[in-house]
Image (tube, rainbow, N blue to C red; front, side, top):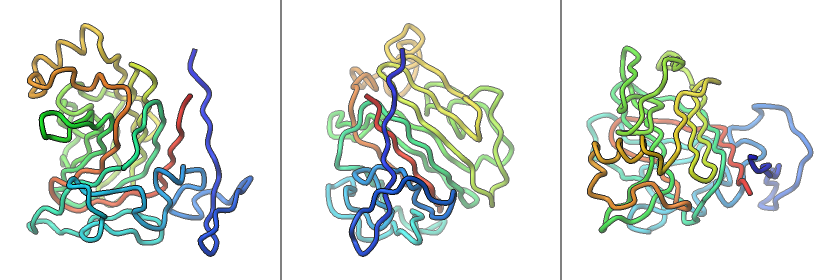
Length: 231
């Protein structure tokens, strides 16, 4: 039986968090029930660079929307990740990107022999919709999205969702579940063994880890982040 989730509705007024029973939907880019320790909608408190430094350049927040400023062809800015560890959770988010962008959201991130790695909800500009394990919505390099996958045009926001509950992982895109896997299953072991992660012992099997926004190329926006910690 799945655990019930808990979430809190918060709005910041003069730096003071106020609990709200409800506000008009989509009235702010920072979803009203996002957990403040995940993203407060104002600054990068609780987030650091790969080197553990404050997020001070490249990434910005405008009206609650997270944006990576580096344009195509400019040097890599770098990933950012939470300082906190997250185990069972549901993360909903909206995103849009520019042509040529390659990004994604990693979770269960931990250090593997000096490299910060984790499971990834792949996000990229693929032109014509693809259904391979490196395409948008895939559990990167391991599980391809199902034929339920449908992307909006490149200049429009898409809605994504990641569900992690114990060994169970789901990826959703625009209201459709496109990945549904069990970590540690025979199929999981086979996919990891066939991937570049086969040299990382126990890849993805850690229950808790950091959450990372990746920077590989291009420009991306994230809004309406809604994070619910599960029991």
